[in-house]
Structures are given as C-alpha cells and as structure tokens.
Image 1 (cartoon, rainbow over the protein chains, first blue to last red):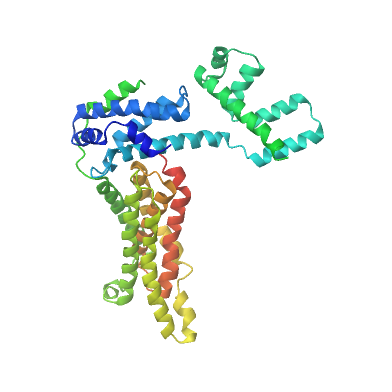
Image 2 (image 1 turned 180 degrees about the vertical axis):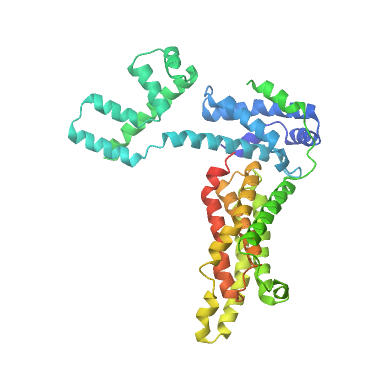
Length: 190
Length: 212
C-alpha cells in the first residue's frame, strides 16, 4: 500500500494540482474534471486492495470525493496535492477495514479455548457447526448459512437476507476464509 | 447514486475557498473559550481582587504558562486537522512550557523553609483546582472537537489529544481569573493536571467522535 505507487498512478502532480487550485478559486469545470479523474484512480486504488468486485468500492470512492469537496480548505496549495488525496483515501480505506474488522474481531484466544473444550466434551456435530458459525460476523454467518447449509442460490439468499448478490459472494468467501483460519490456528498451536 | 451524478452535483455550485481552514478553527475556539469564560463568571465568578492581581507576578506566571501551552495546543490542533500530517513529534513542544515552569518551581522550593513546602505544593485549593479547570474547559472542549471533526484529521487519537490540551489550556487561562494561588509548584502540578484531563479525554474519545 505504498504511497509512491499511488502517486505514480495519479497523473502528473502538477496537472491535478492546477485543477485543484482552479477549483479552489471557484472554477466548476476544473472541479468536475478533477473529481472525475480522481474517481477513476480511486476506483482502481480501492479495487486492488479490496478485491475487484467488493461491494464497498464505489461507496469508498464517493466518500473520498465528498471529503475532497467538503474538506478542500484543508489543502495547502504549497504542498503536494497527491499526498493530500492519498491521505484521505488511505484514511477512508483504513476506516472501512476497521469497521469490517470490528464486526469480525472475534478474540482468537477465546475461540481456541472453545475448540479445546469441544474436543473433550464430544459435542454433536450440529452444535459444533452452530458454535463455529457463531464466531463469524452476522453478515458472513448468514450468507454461509443460507447458501452453503440451507442450500439456497445466491439470488434466493440475497432476497432472503437483503444483502446484494455480490455482497453475499464476498461474505461467503470471507467467512470461509475466516473459518479456515479459526480452524487451523488451534491445531497449529498444538 | 451514480458516481458521475455525484460529481456533477458537487461541481454545480463551487464556491471559491477564500479563507484557510485555520480561520474556521480559530472562530470555533474563540466561541468555545468565550462560553467557558461565561461559565466561570456565571458559576463561581472571578476573584474579588482581580483588578490588583493583574499587576502581580503570580497572575502572569499562570497566564504565561497556560497561554504558552494554549499556543502549542493550537499549533498541534491545526497540524493534526490536515489529513497528510501524521507525525507525533510535535507533541514534544508541549513539554517546553512545562519544563520552564518546572525550573522556576525547583528554584522556589530550594529557597523555601522546610515547613512551608507542603503549603507551596498544595496551596489551599489543590484538590479542587484540576477539576475546576476540567469543568471550565468543557465548553471550549466541545467547540474545538466539533470543529476538528469538520476538518480532516487522520490521526484521530492525536488530534483529540491536541484539541483537548488546547481546550484545557483555554479553560485554565479562564480559571486563572478566579484562582489566587501564587506558587510555581502549585501551578506546575495542579494546573498541568487540570489541562491534561481534557487532553486525555480527547485522546480517549477521539477515535470515536472525530470519525468522518
């Protein structure tokens, strides 16, 4: 997630800064051109980091554009424009990841204890499955429950729980990955 | 909404940005500090001998200290209000006024007879002073945090701490209109604590309330 990569991708610093300076002076056309160009760059910036079809990308792009617009007086025209935009994009990305990780932040220690206790107590497979699924964030749990256990199609699941189809796919994917991680770690640590 | 529509909408009425964000922040800070002053006047009031006190050294010792810290707090707040400013190094500047007053405090204590030491440290209001400063600084705290949130901080904890220290220093400057303690050790201990409390509160709630 290097800043230089991001800057290299943005067109020349000078060009964008000129647009920004004109926009700050009240030039609507320059503002339009600036935001349009930024949107393209932001889309690929977030796409590379979240996976190409993650549902959050367009939301993030729009959030950054709005921030660039409403908080534009915090830009100092004597300093690089690209670092300013990068700082905002990076902040929004980190905020988005933090939000989703808060939902996913199952304390790993507890889950290990849970696995240990389960082994000795010989619970039924059904209970284990429910327990393991319960460690997932609600959205992921629901997506996996509906598609992998209840056997619904993606579109049926989407109608049932209100998540978009692409979000269902993303959540199943993330949830399975997380389950594998949760399952691997207690064994890995003995 | 489509992103292209959003861009169109944002570009229809682009008002020129004539003033820097620091003007907005200063205005919010002034309003908050005025409200803190009002709070002091309406609740506990200023000291009765304020007219004579402003000609004495202890009064100015307090003000130099709190205003000095306020200036550092203001610079730090404006620094952290920008998204591309992330370095915490500037926080060291807060220690400059503390160090200077500490030197003075050591000097005062060296000259003092042993039986006076306790009195020099504690004055007559040590237990109330930090809480009073904290309470008086609340209006300023709300104002600067509110404005900080409208700017673009990306280090929310540090931005909250800086804004909290600024509010604390403003509250302490106001509180000095009431306080009639006169020793440097008292000020360096209890004023500092009183100003630190809003700073810590800012650092504590910054990540939550400053999110944008």
